Image 1: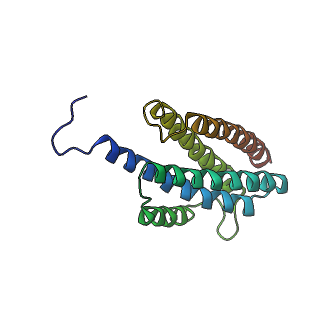
Image 2: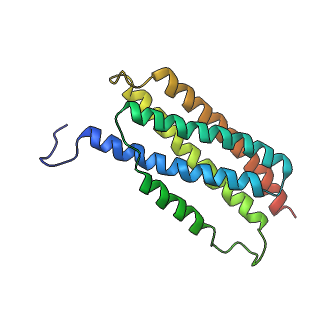
Length: 168
C-alpha cells in the first residue's frame, strides 16, 4: 500500500487505535463496576462482579501489551472517556428520582457492545502477531476467547433482564 508523504505510519496508526480501545476499556471498567453495584437482580450483580474483574484484567493486559509495543497510554483520553461515561447517565430513563429497571437493560447492551469491540482488537492483534514477535498469538487468542465467553454471559443476562422488565 502506498503511503502519502506526511501521512501517519502504521505504527502511529496502531498507537491511535490501541489508545482508542484503551479509552473504551477504561470506560467499560467503570460501567461494569456500576452495573455490578446497581443492577436490580442480586444474581446478575454477582455475575457482573466477576465479569468486572475480568474486564479490569483485560484492560491491564492491554496496557502491558501497549508497553511491549512502545505505545504510551494517553491518560487524558481515558479521563475524557470517564467524563463521557458520567454524562451518559443523564439520559431520561422513565423515572425522575430512582434508577429505572430499563437502565439495567441498556447498560447490559452497552457492556456487550464494548466487549464485542474488545474481541475485535484481540482478533486484529492476532493477525499482527504473525509479523510482530512482541505480540503473542496464543495470548491474544485466549483473550479473544474470553471476550466471546463474556459476550455470551452478557447476552444471557440481557435476555433475562429484558424479560423481567418488559413482561411486567
